Image 1 (cartoon, rainbow, N blue to C red):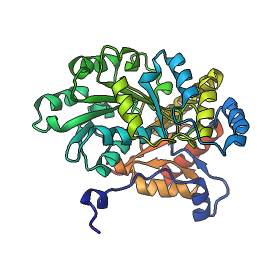
Image 2: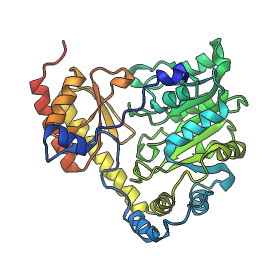
Image 3: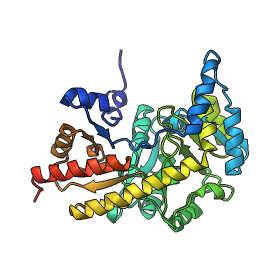
Image 4: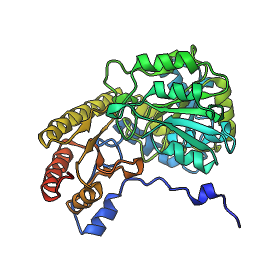
Length: 374
C-alpha cells in the first residue's frame, strides 16, 4: 500500500530519555532527569487528593464537555464558556487546529527554533511549515514574520501562525509592545488565526511580558493555548486548554475525540487550578533554580539565554553529543537540542535544589573532561 512521502519522511518527536532506561543502560542507581521541563514538586496535593477520591468512578466515561473544568476556567479567566475547550495536552489542540483549518498543500507559519510539534503535526497533515529567522540572542522576530506575510508570494498559503510565547527550547519571549504591533496589523485577519502557545506563561517574570488573552475582543483572529503540564505539575495526565472565538471552539469540538480528556485528568485539573499556594510555590522554586543556574553557568563561562520558562538553554562550547553521553554516564539527563539545529547547546530544566546542584557538579566535571571547540 502506498504511503505519502510526508509520512515516510516524518521524524517523530523524541522525548527526554526516561530515568529507568538510563539506569539500565549505564548500570546506575542514582539518576536525575532535568530534560523535559517537568515540575520538580510533582502534582498539587489537592489534585492528588481529588484523583484518589475519583478512582472509584473509573467505570464511567468522562464528561465529554468538561463541564466543571470549563465552569472553573470561565470564572478564573473571566471568559464565556463558549470561548473555551480542552485537549489531551496542548499537542492535541495543535494537531486538531491544523487539521481543521489547513488543507494539504497549505501552510502554517512560525519562527525558527519554535516548539517542533507545530512542524510535526503540520507534516502529518500534509501541510507545509514556513519559518522566519530569529534575531540576535535567539529572540523571535515578529517584524520578520510581518514582512513574510506582506511580501512573500507564498503568504496566501498560510492559514495558521504559531507564536510560542515564552518559547521552548530557547526560553525567550516577545515583549508586549511587539506583540501588540503585530496584532494591530494581523489580529483581525479573517483568513488566518494567530495562535499563542503559552505553555510556560505562569513562569514568565519579565515586566514587559503579557498574554493577549484579555485583548481577544479587539483581535478576533487570536487563539491562546495553555497547559497544565508545566507549572501545575500534571504532565502525566495531559490537559491542555484552548481559548478562542466561539466559531473556532465549535469547529474544534466537532473534530476532537469525544472523550479526549479522561476523568482523572479532569478532576485533577479542577483541583490544581484552585491550588494557588502550590502554583506560587512552583513559581518560586523555578525562579530560584534559574537564578542558581545563571550564577553557576557564568562561573563556568558558558553562554546562556535568560529564560521566561522553567529551563535554561546554554552553550556547552563543545560537541553536545559527547557532553550528553558523558552526563548520562554520571546519572544526569539533560536535553541536547540537535533537532533544532543547535550543535553545542543543551536545555536544562529546573529541578529541586539538590538536583540542580548535582547537575551542575557533574556538568563541571564533564567540561574538564571534554575540550572546548576552538
